[in-house]
Image (cartoon, rainbow, N blue to C red; front, side, top):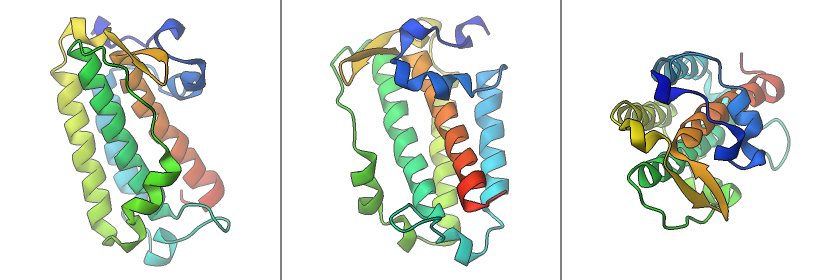
Amino acid sequence: MPHYDRPGPQEYAPFYAGYIASVPEGDVLAILTQQTDDLRSLLAPLPLATWHHRYAPGKWSVAEVLGHLCDTERILACRALRFARGDVTPVPGFEENDYVPAAQSDARAFGGLLDEWATVRDATVSLVSGMPVAGWTRRGTVNDAAISARALVYIILGHVEHHRSVLDERYGVR
């Protein structure tokens, strides 16, 4: 599907280039779905001790990383929805380091947070699959920078890839 093509660098702030570059080539809907299966397979078998593990003092636990993925995907998908629908109202950023403690993900049931993330992802898949071609390339402004709905979807994918790498490299979750 041509409108699912990778966004060009003019569609997002340079900060997001690494996220977008980490998304493999292919059908975005298939990648969104596969990423759901992959993350569930990676995290579901973790023992409770690993779920609450922090690789260093002051760093997020595995549960908090997953809670962060839920919050961030919701925010990015909402932005994609707004811009795809033609809403050009500028959107402020959000401070992830305020959201993580407020979410209290460490107090959540082991499987409940993973189920929540899969539900959030299912909503993203529904949004993307129903997005009209014209909506895919519409743009809005976040933190004073222009961004397209398409770029936001790719950032969602790249953001998860980033944290999967962190889980592997710093937490030993493989």
